[in-house]
Length: 157
Image (cartoon, rainbow, N blue to C red; front, side):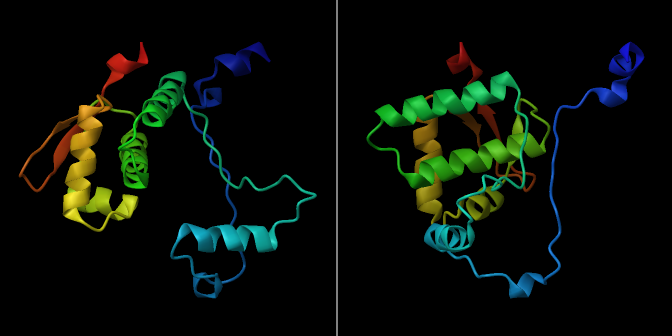
């Protein structure tokens, strides 16, 4: 057993569990807003079961603390809206997809799509306010490869 623990194949940083249903995507309910998702969940959930989680990720402490600090900061701020939270989560998702690298490559188009922000004015307002709240550092670029965002790790201390 001790030899297995030293094997690098047993060092797991992330686990993803999923299944593929036997029906086509076009047969699934259409979800266009969070209320639709909530209604589908409530109408189909057997409350005698706790098995709602189809996917989970094991987060490292640093990433977990970043979310905790973000939630603490936004709970004290009057100007924070759902668009700020959505944008933060879209940035966080990009960070995760890029294997937690320090400089997160982003494009406005991708972040707006994943955060469901339709207005460029709202996007820029949210980016500016996340910078003002000291959550992120934003380095804009007019190059097609995109800009860079850094999470302010100083807030984690």
